[in-house]
Length: 66
Image (cartoon, rainbow, N blue to C red):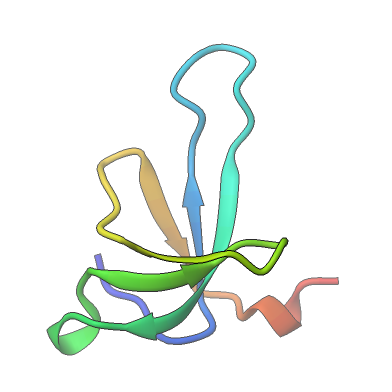
């Protein structure tokens, strides 16, 4: 998994009815775009994530989404 600052990380729901969770990558802490990532959710909360197999990187920048 490789990402850049501004990409979005989508964590898919694990059970039926659970929504996907999308966060913006604000800093890449690993070498060459690898995890861990500092991420920010839509409420402004920041945390560090090492995404699992239920996650994908959306390379559209958060500013590209309308």
